[in-house]
Amino acid sequence: MKCPNCKNKMTCTQSDYHYTESGLTNIYLSGIEIYHCSCGEEIISLPTVSQLHDLIAIDLIKQKHRLNGRELRFLRKNMGLTAKNLGEYLGIDNATISRWEKGTQPISSPHDRFFRLLYLNMRRVPQDEINAVIQKDFAAISDEQVETPPFMIPREKWSKTEICFQ
Ligand SMILES: [Zn+2]
Image (cartoon, rainbow, N blue to C red; front, side, top):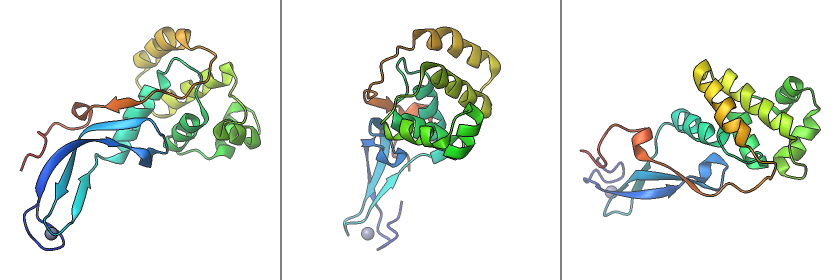
């Protein structure tokens, strides 16, 4: 890659990346390419956002605890829904959605499951995968609402190319 600043050839290194742009605090991406130039220019090569967010969302849907506020907000936004839309679909007012997302009130267990189902359906996840999630993952969801431990999205999930392939 050529430096957009001085047109010199940039060097490439790879690194894990703390993906705070997601609005979540616990997502890391492995094998992110960082291009450096002797002039000080630095370019971080992130994968396509929509593809990446779908991967993160599926990991969240399979979490074995009640969804926390940041997770709810991330999933709602990835569905392209406003808090008002979601409130209408779940049959509750959007002030409640807002309290869930701020973490001042936990989402109820039935709403949590219905919300996950809504997500899987609206994002057109194949029916046999949805059934597997219901039977395997839903049965194991505990009532506790915890901060999700850090998790890594590995490079091979979104990229077929070698790291720093020129
Ligand atoms: Zn440069």
